[in-house]
Length: 55
Image 1 (cartoon, rainbow, N blue to C red):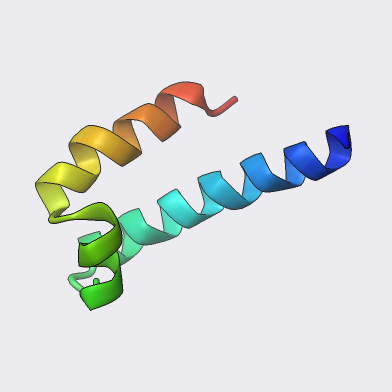
Image 2 (image 1 turned 90 degrees about the vertical axis):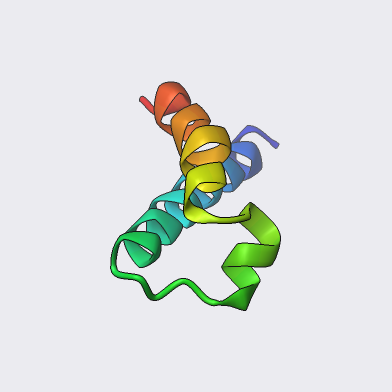
């Protein structure tokens, strides 16, 4: 079970970082906007929290 949770955390952090790269390249699609909101909302709510918790 511990390995599974570590895989989920790694997947979450990779997804957030990939979304950050796509937002920076202006390649964000409708899916990213629906899930995370605009770039400001994404940086404030998702990216900031994920980077604070990463090792």
